[in-house]
Amino acid sequence: MLTRKALAALALCAATPLSAADYSDPTWPCIQRKVERLSEGLMWPHPIPETMPEDPALRREIEQLAAKLAIRRLEVSELQADVTAFAERNGGDPALLGLVFEETFSSLSGRRSRIIDGIGKFSLSQISLSERIEAARQDMEAEMALEDPDFDKVDALEEQLDWDQTIYTDRQQSITYLCETPVLLEKRLYAISQLLQGVVSG
Image (cartoon, rainbow, N blue to C red; front, side, top):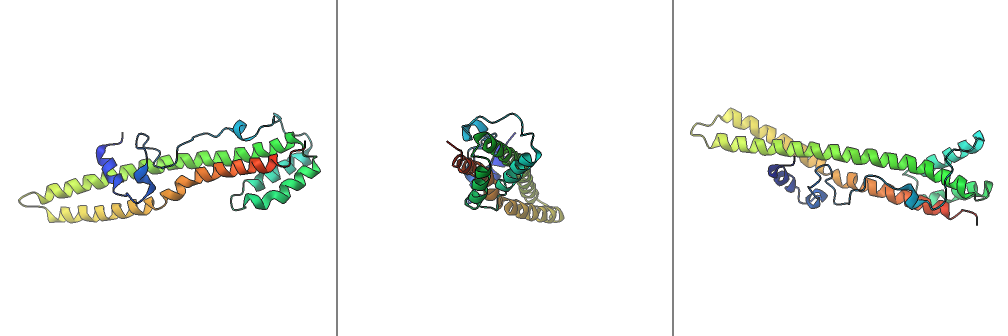
């Protein structure tokens, strides 16, 4: 359970998106709303066949186009020619284009789910580290409050604290990218859906 101490330690990074997060879910440190699963039906309006075509060449063509659409380093606008060529070869068949979208959706939504799971593990790891930082601070303060402090112990605690704080801060710098990635994948799927719908016949 997320403690007040952990919240306080996490709040130290007020310059990061984590500071605006909703700590009611400690596995979600992002300011973006958490949407665990996307709905294929909300993105694609046409019926999608339950099975792939029997023709191996057509099946391979669908899979290859879907695999290319899922490559994030390719801008969606760069894929217009591939989508148009596929549609022209297949008469703009909404069923086949739906299968292309389904394959692409499966790939990107699966990747998105794995990233969300990774964000959860990352967040819990940061919470654990923040609690360790707070515990080290309290131990150091308690030792220094003694009449005869053990300065070797204080020195060891200070070294641990410096190291843990460095690790915590370095990790925090990646949280913006991590939190944006599921949103970017969702936007890509919507854009791909629009691209494919644009070449549906009739």
